[in-house]
Image (cartoon, rainbow, N blue to C red; front, top):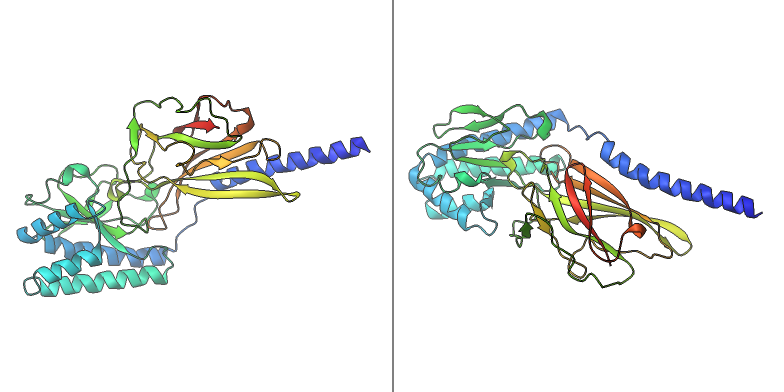
Length: 344
């Protein structure tokens, strides 16, 4: 009878390990869902039309100076909701740019309606200045480009369609931004346009703040580094998030937890970001050392919100958290980055 019970426990353990690891592999190795080519082509055409007309608007020196001032003063600097800017521009000078602004507003409204129809999670057109060196050049530059964000997955983009101040169509390198100041229009990638508090950066991670603290048991990520933000220059800063997956034992059965934590402000490659310790860092999760499963999986992603392909998988790490020390952080790496793991 004991042999049978031990065999059954072994089968359950093996199944749980297989399911946990399988979930990690399935999410990391699954093919990205193909976008409807008709939908992509239609929305691309509409966004390129917005870019072409906006390039004509920015051909005027006063318009260019006005736009430069507004986007610099925006709550989330160098990014604005397109329809909000057009409303401000119309209030400033209805007569001077009346027809052009009206046509732009119509095209933006049509593109956002198309996004809603096609099921985009954030059906909003935004305008941004993603390249840092372009931001101080825009106001006084005689030549300006307006680019349309490619809607294909980054790995499939061959060129970026842009328009010069005279409305001439041109192709830009998707890997390297041009020298000429370039404004970019395209679908929103995050719901909020509010600024996020900057994270503390470091060349190397610091030591644990409370190495003697033992809460039994919280496990989290106080430090994170990325080596590939998987975001083209037209998109600006990436939207990094982590999926945390683990099993807990509750009411006499196992429950699989799969939770997402957004990491706003993790923007640059090869920089350690301080996310904080227990109490103000939402990557920390309570785990019972007596009852809960010993494995926890961290998956790292870059969110595209359907704007240009599926979310980009940056790598994952499976950890036996019960083997982590209570004092000090544990340095581990995944496919496109490094983490420090803390157990309290």
